[in-house]
Figure (cartoon, rainbow, N blue to C red):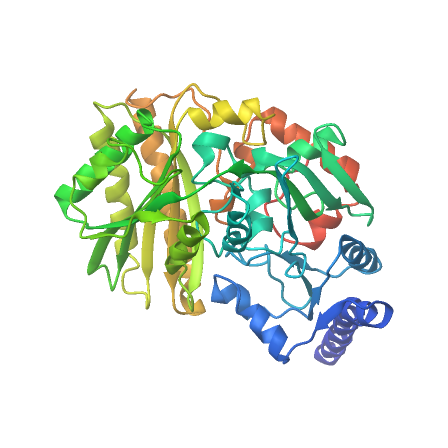
Length: 502
């Protein structure tokens, strides 16, 4: 009798859930002209392949909604307010954390058709929709002689990148990408549409610059853009011999402390694959000019790359050329840690300790099918927070008392069945880096009284992004959330890095 009653309850609950799931999709279809992609359609299937992680793509939304205007987004939010359905909002699908830009059983709002790119030469601004990818933005702006501060790999979508603050090749010239946002157009939880700027809703303007998806759906960004002609860039590849590794780690440390030119950008990436039989370094180089002056990248070039693709080209070509780094057809995870830059004397020991830790932890997963492990050293010199402050600041609110390095960690692999193991591997990697930093701080090798926030765009889902911000920034996020989303619509109904309760 108990089993029969329980089975009946489960059947009823399943039927109720199915009716709720159908509600948003059917209501949008019946009431509006908004495009609704249904499961098993070619368009639906194609959209689900656009995620960087196949795990996110394997989640099955009840439908995919493709609004073309801000007003249509507001209509969808209004309909969602009529039920309690879980949903997600997707830009380019770069974020691999499940349920952050993906959903199982609820509607997915794709911003694909919110793809405006318009340039105003009089104000030197461009209005850019969240449905664009950065190589598309770069290609269209190339013709104007201007560029926007954006992603370093062209396939990255605009929307999530901007809400996480956005680190760019141009950050030492112009700050975080979010520092160049003049105006956001936002649909709030009550389905109202607001224009947000430094003078209109200034607190909301601040929290949108690195506060994630906690406050609304941004349907367009008005960006300050900057003159740009031909640029120079490409990749250097090195075998990861002990000698090359030591030289590269020393070079990136020195580059960060003695930043040679604000027009220069670099990502220094170690890669391991084929059961760690292939160990290489791949460097992504950029210079905002036809050729870098002598001395800018000499310390890296002198090591002797086996491959050098750097050349003079258009910025959009560089971004598209970097798309080779997107690993398609795999489950993908990303994590991060921020470290204070060690001094010149202790740098070799500290940098090698972090590298060796990554090698040792990635070795524990080397037989996971299809494993590619990578670790990127991303310089965060004092110049970036200095520029950010002159542009009004952001949620990360970095000070310029120290140089830092933002470390990005990536593990990709073939099968979802290995996710739990890689989840533990990722946690062990970034937690171990944190422990190394703390150990060197306790021995006074690294400065201890320093602010080390996390970079949201690189965070793994359990990482405490808001807990690592300055207390006053966390309090501001809590205040604004209470004002614009008092009922917890975004907090309870969709994924992402959540603001802890006050």
